[in-house]
Length: 426
Ligand code: PMP
Image (tube, rainbow, N blue to C red; front, top):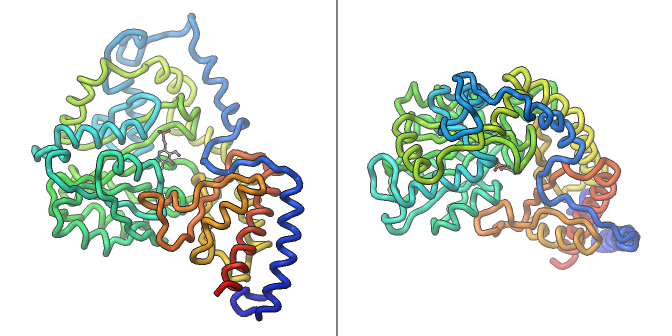
């Protein structure tokens, strides 16, 4: 396989002309495919339809504590669901609040609470002047958007195969009390799919931020979303923080959005007593309590951790062929050509592709013109600006395999075409 970088100009011109032919054939097909967001496909949603049958007018509407779930009460959620989330998140069940349908909503609430009322008895973040938030990149655009919305300066931190570059994190937080937090997706990270190494987790637990009100937003959105027989394991940050006397540093989040129904699942948050006392007060003004009927539905359907793991094997059976298709295409079309590198995750919802510097926007727009919508280039960086214009998040979950085959063939053509254009223009 000839590397693009070692081709002569005439070889490149010939390759480019062939690619343009293939590209134009695709364009003529009038495709309309979408790989933009990490949504479960319809067959995945169908896996949870029986959950809707678990609750009807004849069902027991009481929690294990005897509370009537149709009424107000249990602001921290059903105890049995708190226990389940405690296991999923690796946090004590007394330290869990089970909320509404969205963990992103709870993250927004936590930031909002700190903005107006502050953590650790400090001035509210919103009254401290210029404040900063660390954004491991490539990362999740909606995380970055929350802190941008609240007026933080977003600081990109490089993502390594072991997690965020901890040398950079430690340096940034050590002397600068205006750095208030960091976004983390520690398992099967969005979009790189990597899981933080034990050393990274230990370094997080041992952080010594200048700001007393610095918080780690530990979003374990993909905690049970394995795709192989050799799943990643994540060291338990809660326990590590206990050992280090830093239990007030992290706030944990998770949801069943990619287990049952996104938008109609259950989310939870976990934190130390001190953090929870601030957050519970905030919630006591915000709501009289969560939708406990949906919580009951989830516990009737999923039952316990074994039930969740069992359910996740069904998701895996549907998702594995899709990831195989994407990774197979990348390897067969781009392998050895020196025009892209990509991750091969053991779980989660994404494959992250790095194309040649300065080519990501071009690849996304070429795909769009030919009918395939991808996540916008740059979306995985703060302010939507990828300094190298290099990273593209591929979301294999939603389209059927046959469509993925087409979309990925086109994607690989566009990656090469953009590379050839770039090398010829040098
Ligand atoms: N966190 C991460 C890392 C995600 O990828 C997503 C969904 N794409 C969410 C949170 C959203 O979670 P929820 O539906 O619970 O708000």
